[in-house]
Amino acid sequence: MLKIYIDAAFQSKTRTAGLAIIINDDGQQTPYKIRIEDVYDNHQAEFFALDQVLKLLEVNEQLDETLFIHSDSKIVVQSVQKSYVKEEHYREILKRILMSLEKAPLAFVKWIPEKENRGADQLAKQALHQQGKLMSWIE
Image 1 (cartoon, rainbow, N blue to C red):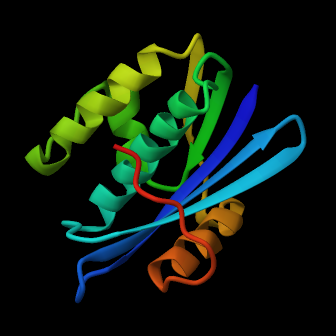
Image 2: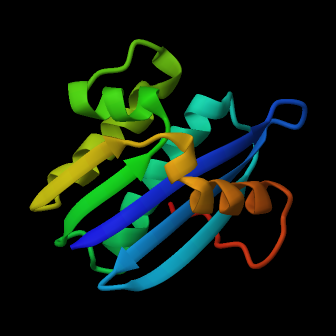
């Protein structure tokens, strides 16, 4: 069972975002930070964070675990739960996310308040400002 926290920080002037992923596996916590460019808005950045964690899990052969993914983005969580998003900007990435989630035996994507996601929030801000070691974008 993996307990995962994700978040994104977005800067509209530069259209850049910092993505944060924290994976808890049997008490061992592993943080990841990614900085990306050409981001449409904060919501898109939040979708990218979920997409990247699923790609990371697949690369690390952990997608066969039970997943508990926590996000403070209501649009991301609701879109995954409904398998639908109104805005066209997010449809393709939601499609990729849903396809990845199908590979997991059991996956829960849950909304949590910002105050319960402070660790991921801090990492996302660090990634946005390029502080510390950043992970590369996973294709």
